[in-house]
Image (cartoon, rainbow, N blue to C red; front, side, top):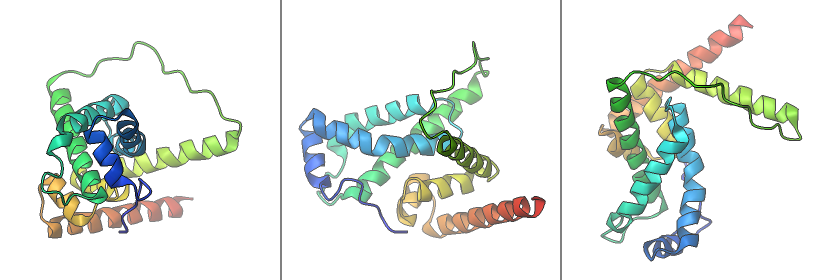
Length: 192
């Protein structure tokens, strides 16, 4: 899978600025990667993806001096590092939730205001719900691999390091995850 250059070739300068504590560089890192991390956490069934995304970036900020101590970390390595932190925070959240009961909601969530293009907004919401539904039907290990590869755009090696698995194991989980999604889509098409 091709790696995506999210910082427009300016990653080294942005990282250097972030290490110096420059607000613009820190903001650029957050604004560029936070939506992808939040999407990953949302697809993983995180109860409060925005809150957990904030925790992830607090961890990134705290540990920024530890990233790339040998000087060979590029943008892809940085993304992998950020998603490793996200995965660890997600596992911490799951352990916390397993120990305490689910709170009942105090009130219903208010829908955000509609954009000018209502049809596009509805289509986007339905698409996101469909993707969430498909991801929820995958076994957890397959879901982790597929979402890290697609949303995080991590390499097989990066996913293996993040999840503590072998590259062969990651490839097998990815293949089975995509096969499962294919079967689910086929059954949906047949039902129509």
